[in-house]
Image (cartoon, rainbow, N blue to C red; front, side):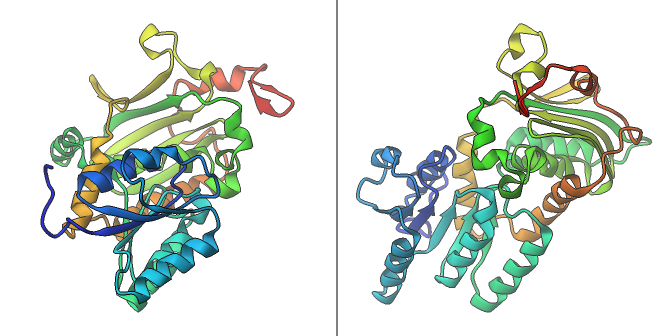
Length: 332
């Protein structure tokens, strides 16, 4: 297996949220780096995807039993080395704390936490326990994005003009799930957009201005001014917002920079394995790296809507003029 080292072989993992969609990528990554999943937890028991890689892993639907088993392994001298967190967003802080207090390092899916203050608390716990929280920022590991960063890091006479458009249709189930609850997911800009706000800062530097133009349960839009770019952004899970272009019937995911288009629709599953390889090599992304994007989405969640400030994304006009967008309070 490419990238696997002697140090990574035999590492013991536990996984929280194993029934979820993104857990599949973590299971594959653990297998690809030669790790062993010894315990997993989820409130749902629809976890047949474990069979493809780790059929012998212990599984629990009650966190108290999962916790007790992890502590038993620790007392026996066979502790868990890493706890992978794939639970709902609002649980990430408490599950990362569980990992550290259990004597393990944490590998946490996006968004690491919902508010910057949660990072402060986790950093204090890192110092107390001597363990580390690593966050998944796989887009930073994409070779194409690394090349773009090298190009856009060069000084320019004026800032780059950038459009971020990310539309990926979701069904009505989304609004009934935790993802549709801003208190638990952080809303569209956090749940869908945090990776891309991090990517923008990776490419163009720190945020200097942050404006919200629209904020709803199915769509958000705004304007970001970074050190080297001005960004109009639009995020949506409503199929009504998809352009008429036949190539974009199911999704429209792109960053446009002048005549350059960065496609965000690629199959990036291997980047989770790369992320695990980097963590095991001691090069995982620390919380200091993710803090700026968490601060950005927290600001977007709480800032006033100011449609007259900054540059407006061209897709937003259709949303604002769509009188039939909602029925009984839900998007259609």
